[in-house]
Amino acid sequence: MSIPAFPANSYDFVKYVPARNYIGGEWRDPSGSEELPIPNSRWGKAISTVRMSTAADVDAAVQAAKVAQRGWREVPLRERAMVMYRARDLMLKHIEELAWLVSHENGKLFSEAKAEVEKGIECVEFGCSLPNLAAGEQLEVSRGVRCELTYEPLGVVAGIVPFNFPFMVPLWMLPQALVGGNAFILKPSERVPLSSLRLVEIFAEAGLPAGVLSLVQGGKEAVEAICDHPDIKAVGFVGSTKVAKLVYGRACSSGKRALCLGGAKNHLVVVPDADVDLTVDNIVASFTGCAGQRCMAASVLLAVGDVDHIVNKVVEKSAALKLGVELPPVTTAAAVDRMASYVNDAEKRGANVRVDGRGKNATEGGFWFGATVIDQVSADMPAGREEIFGPVLSIIRVKNVDEALKIENGNPYGNASSVYTTSGDVAARIMGNAEAGMCGVNVGVPVPREPFGFGGWNDSCFGAGNLTGWDGFRFWTRQRKITTKWQLQKDATWMS
Ligand code: NAD
Image 1 (cartoon, rainbow, N blue to C red):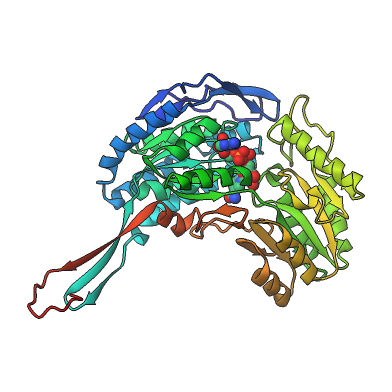
Image 2: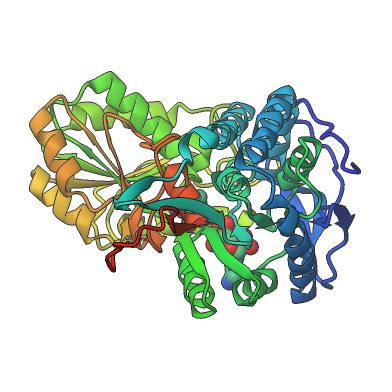
């Protein structure tokens, strides 16, 4: 083990080791010429660096993975799951260190980072449960003839993940893929490659054989090499819609199984009978948590009828959030500019900026954007239509639930949708008709926690099924159907 524990236990700036590749159980430097800084967004300074990998690095990982997978697939599933138990213990043991690492490289608050690590551990726990779930079916399909179904590994598979959950999103894939008997190549976001260093070390310490889990740092070139490599059998992707579409198309065209989760523009519908305090707390937490950099964050508030008693409180509460304490920085200086440009544009088009996060700073040099609430937005404005991925809430005023649904369903994304109401009828209409894969009633961030599968619809997901839960296990395995006859009776029909 050559990656030291992350040294921070506060937000104070620290330096950390450069990100490296992990191939065949060894740490190696990526072979590309481009090297990028890894910014700590609270201080606007690099805590480390990452060098880009080339197609040759991807191939080296695949060759090591192919060898390792031959042995790993022979290990009984129950024993493979034991690695998850040990990894879970190690994650719990190091939870504070891991949370500080996530917080420093991603920028989110320590409390948010710790919640991320805890959610990652929950995914590992699903991996622990697989021996109790992964029994296939069997039936006597004809006299003396049995048909049995088994879940077999695909071989070498890969996961490409985004910057916003550097510890948890890899764990949306790893437990099912590894317990399923595959060798896995992880390609983290080049903006947050450090949590993955500790993640692979934890799995190695938990007893995962060398080569079964590889780490390939990098960006576009590494991703394209993964999509094109003939010996990678499946690709899981989480990131923006633009890249999800590219990866899905490219991976599928080289014959791979692919499931690519994309971006989001999540709508919350609020009607006049909603519980005021719960609704206000939920809405503010949903659009400002992790600085709005969550694919499940509220982005549009569809205010139905007279809900000013709620909207005014949302405005008040958002304006009072302490930057740097209750609201973390955003990922890069470019993200600050992107968010500001949406607010400027909405203002120019006549929207009312009621809480203005532009130009706010909690530290000199950090990348900050305060909570922002824009009222009187329309669905055709960029702020009402596109993913902003920051702590910005766009309020669209509508007359009734039908109009709310029309606007929500006119948006191409389909990740999350929530309704705030005390009426079962209103809730049923939204839940029954919203074009979204993950829906909530009086829940601001309706993440379907394990064992339920995570995945949206429409432009938020390319490929069939969900990435977590049981669907994840089905995605990373293939089903073998074995038909057996041991009674060699003479009066056999064609069916037997
Ligand atoms: P991104 O699409 O820029 O990057 C995701 C991954 O793709 C990274 O590993 C990156 O290196 C790689 N990549 C980037 N550009 C590429 C290109 N041109 N060709 C090939 N690979 C490329 O996403 P991000 O900015 O890291 O993450 C934020 C996005 O992820 C948001 O849109 C957010 O909604 C989405 N997201 C979605 C989910 C979900 O479950 N649907 C979860 C988390 C994040």
